[in-house]
Structures are given as structure tokens and as C-alpha cells.
Image 1 (cartoon, rainbow, N blue to C red):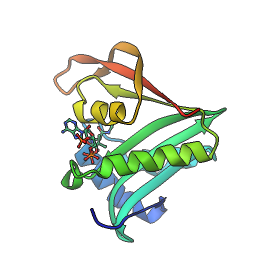
Image 2: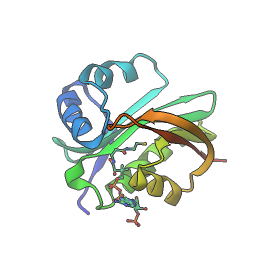
Image 3: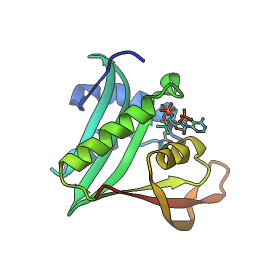
Length: 153
Ligand SMILES: CC(C)(COP(=O)(O)OP(=O)(O)OC[C@H]1O[C@@H](n2cnc3c(N)ncnc32)[C@H](O)[C@@H]1OP(=O)(O)O)[C@@H](O)C(=O)NCCC(=O)NCCS
């Protein structure tokens, strides 16, 4: 694994982030969602993972309110998946949220998202609830959301 940095996202990164988002997610956030929504409130944390200053390979959007951290978005460029970068990025997110006072981290994930579920479980997240038929699927059907939590205290 090469050297890397996890640093705050800059507005100039949005184009690259949007390109990754579109390839990584079934229902991607738009460029305007990626650019604006996380910056509206000062309790949002948006960081990029890069192997050189200009080579962004992943990012996360998270927030922390009243001690509760929440994962809003996390992705690794498909060209770099399966090489340990998701593990690195999730570690960076946990460190960030712990640093700003999170006692726990919450997230929701599609039941069919095997890689993400495995990553979270490997990091000690546990399933606390299932929202029935929460997400729509590409074929028009719906699937459950898993609500997962990791305690930091
Ligand atoms: C989920 C995601 C961030 C994982 O990133 P990654 O760089 O591929 O993950 P890593 O290589 O660090 O793998 C870490 C662990 O995740 C799990 N994992 C990763 N890819 C997997 C796969 N294809 N199948 C099963 N488990 C997988 C494994 O537990 C793995 O640990 P191991 O290698 O010791 O078995 C990445 O797949 C991604 O960006 N997916 C699209 C966006 C997304 O779904 N985000 C989450 C929304 S909730």
C-alpha cells in the first residue's frame, strides 16, 4: 500500500469526487449535493483519501451531533477497491469522529451491499435494526436497510 493522506475536502475536489461517486454508487449523490450539503453545517466532516495531492481515491461524509456520529457517505474509487483502502478510510473516519466527541457511530447500509457490511462488521459495527423495504433497487424492487452502530466508549 502506498503513502496516503486523509485531509479535508476542497471545493476543487468536487469534480473528481463526483466522478468516483457516479461509478461507486448505484444511486449517486449529485455534484451539487456533494458540494453543498455537507458544508451547510459546522458539525459535518468531509475528508478525502489521496495517495498524492492530486490523486483522490476515496472520501467520506460524516457528522456528529450531541455525541452521535453518523456516516452519510463513504466510497473508494472502484479502481482501488479490494486493496485495503476502505479499511484505511473507515479508520480515518472513526478517528475523526472520536476526536470531535462522538460516543457512538451510526450508519445505514443496503442489505445487498456485501462489501460494505463486511467492512463495517470487521470494524466492530453491529446490526441494531432493520428498516424493511427501505431502499429502492435498480429493478424497481425494494430492499431492507441495516442500521448499524459502533460504540466508541
Ligand atoms: C465499501 C467500500 C468502501 C469498501 O472499500 P474497499 O477498499 O474495497 O475495502 P477494503 O479493501 O479495505 O476491505 C476491507 C474489508 O471489507 C470487506 N470487503 C471489501 N470488499 C469486499 C467484497 N467484495 N466482498 C466481501 N467483503 C469485502 C472485507 O471484510 C475486507 O476485509 P478483508 O480484506 O480482510 O477480507 C467500497 O466497496 C465502496 O466504495 N463501495 C461503494 C460505495 C459503498 O457501497 N459505500 C458504502 C455505503 S453504506
